[in-house]
Length: 183
View 1 (tube, rainbow, N blue to C red):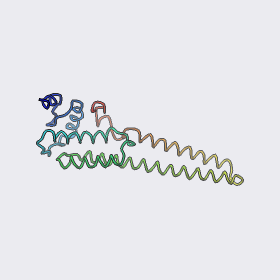
View 2: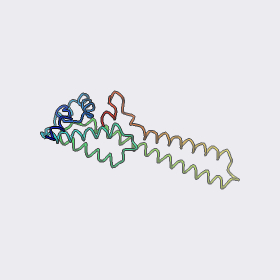
View 3: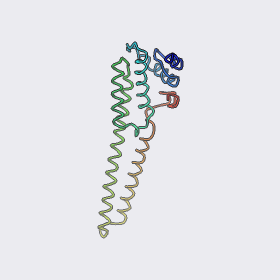
View 4: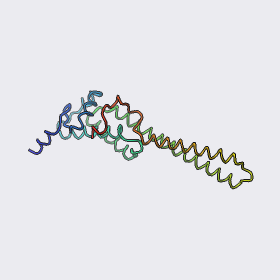
């Protein structure tokens, strides 16, 4: 009886029993990628739903989280989940491609920030050395170096801002629903 009551609150979408809050996203998936579940041979409704929930969770991670919130551990977990749903018969090449994009962009931004910070440290060291040798160093040179440090700090700030925004490859036409509609 309790199981039937739970089912009454859920909606079936293409053979998957989902929460009402998941329906819009599931419909979008099946509209955009109609072949996603063609090879899924799972008979158990609960097991099918669990795998679909994994797909929805992967989408949540790749589409709705800022890069800074995606740790390497989280990306590894998403990769394993992607492997699991693929083995269950889901066609999710498009999500694998998205995972590669996210991973590359995160690594690129983090590498850039690290290099810029190293450059800032080198410039600060140069300024410090010039101040010690004040007789030889001109005030103009010190000002120029300080301006360069400010520029680099601004670039670092811009890179950090990129990490806090939603991934730039998500367009409004790709996913028509908001994160709040999904969860």
